[in-house]
Image 1 (cartoon, rainbow, N blue to C red):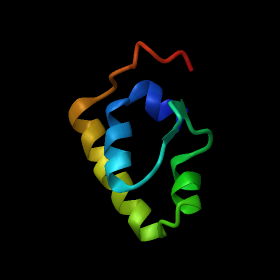
Image 2 (image 1 turned 90 degrees about the vertical axis):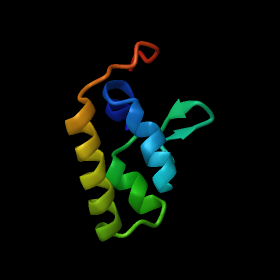
Image 3 (image 1 turned 120 degrees about the vertical axis):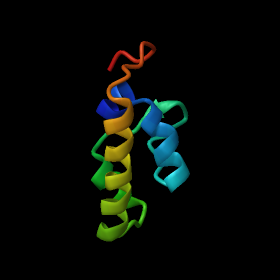
Length: 71
């Protein structure tokens, strides 16, 4: 999750809209996207779709490092 927040900060909003919490009380959650999705009850199929959509966003926008995060 920290790599997503650092390299692709626009995915935070995307993930939150999909229902995957990746920030709690202003702090980035530790662990992987898959771990957090499982913890929050997402199925493998749902996670696969979210990853597919996220990869499309990354392909369009690329890396946009967040200057405010020193992770």
